[in-house]
Length: 131
Image 1: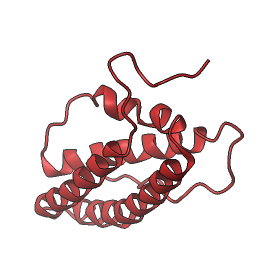
Image 2: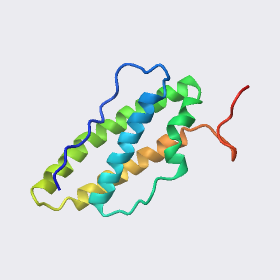
Image 3: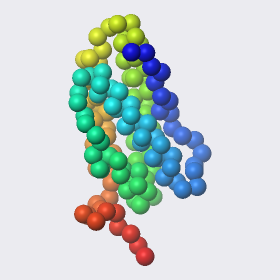
Image 4: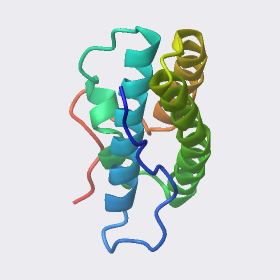
């Protein structure tokens, strides 16, 4: 398998909506996680609702929480980009990258869980909306 790893570097410049850049980065990281899971031999299935809704829910969070989430996304990107590049290099040479992919998957899963824990409570009817 030869593939170029997507750039997961922080997006500079803010989009007027504020959540578009976060949503794009979250989608790129989610896709990168799927690649790592595949290389690790982990079946992940379809991402759950909490994963799909993360950018929307963070958009409604308090500014300090959004800023913390953006820093955490930067950190996760900094881990995933070189990790995927290394896995792809090993895989391209025909090497067995499964144990390294399992380690990266473990790190990714823990970081993603920490990010998801930052989402404010939404209840069963979705995020709180003010009129």
